[in-house]
Image: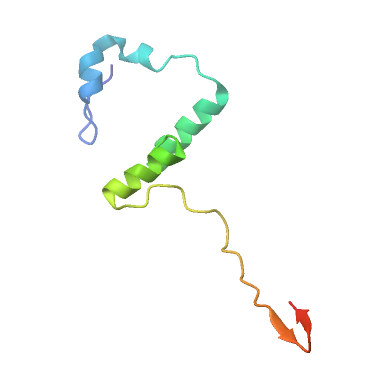
Amino acid sequence: MGDDNPLLTRGPLAERLGEAMAGFFEVDTEEEARRRLRRASGTGRPLGAADGVKALQTQTGRTLADPPLGRPRRVVEQKEERGSRLL
């Protein structure tokens, strides 16, 4: 199962599964599920349904959902002049 590392040690799951741990990750999943799992494991964000993530955010008081990508949208103020609307 590999050597222990000063930074990483075998966790409870590895201790319970023992040598079967290698087969644990050989489950045939569809590509989209693999992509989502890889992304979540790389970002440290929880993987699950949006309502479940919201519940975790409420319980922990932390922001767990992915932030929106890109720049925030610019708010365009509308002005009314002489009965016409200008953007």
